[in-house]
Length: 113
Image (cartoon, rainbow, N blue to C red; front, top):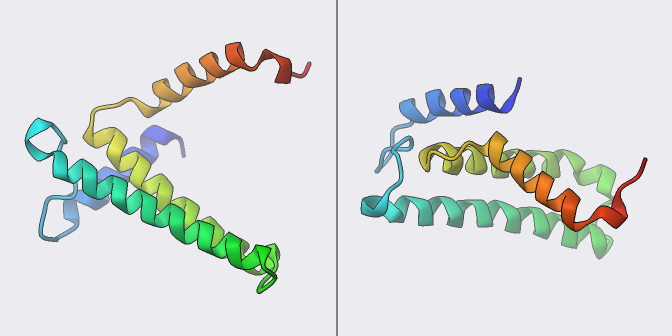
């Protein structure tokens, strides 16, 4: 499944999600609070991932013990990134390709043949 298909799947899920607000609404100047909510949610998922890694680092668990939970948290972050991209009408695939092109130019000393 490619990113476009994942976004379509997320849109379909969001269109059926019942809550206090519309989960699939386009974000613009009139509902910037939706972007704030999604960024807060994304940051929360990142924090949950960091907390797992903290516990691995201090010796409570091994990476192998928690890789499944880390995988789930990464998927949660991807969901929010997909949502933000489509709700802002950002072509995330194109944005990624453009950013990688910039990074290749910036970090040429890291290129390998």
